Amino acid sequence: MQLNQKNIEALIPHSGTMSLLKKVLKWDENHISCLANSHRGKQNPLRNDNILSSICGVEYAAQAMAAHSALSMRSPEGEPRSGYLVSIKNLQLLVSRLDDIATDLVIDAKMLMRDKEFMIYQFRVYSEGRDLLSGRATIFIQGNSLN
Image (cartoon, rainbow, N blue to C red; front, top):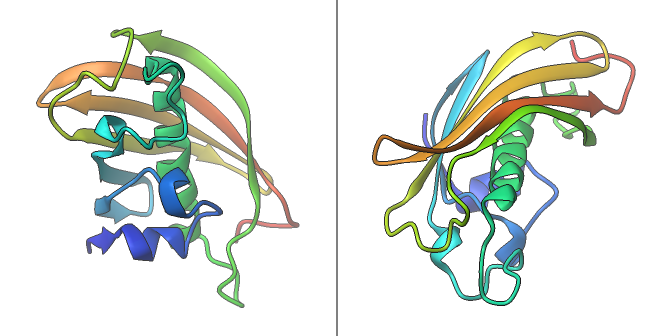
């Protein structure tokens, strides 16, 4: 099931120009794949001196993980729980910047583990088969359980 940017904004705590993902391409219980083109936008709020550093790709991945968490583990009331990025490990930045990537970004995140308060994801950002960055993230989810 694909979701558009408006659907994504209902799942994550970002909106407007800070909502970086254009579309959820597919997702299941353990994986999400998203599409983004906001890295080319001059109004991207993560740009510094008109450059979007590749480290900003971590925020793209974090938004994909937030969308995945909201889609796969909704509370009974349907309200998404707050999540916090607490650790990034094995980060590989394979390019220096993202704003000069002419094609759309694909953001893949695979949940490796979850327990009551933490989730661990492996993520990858690429464009037309070219890896741009990857790593592993630990997310803390506020609340009693991720049922």
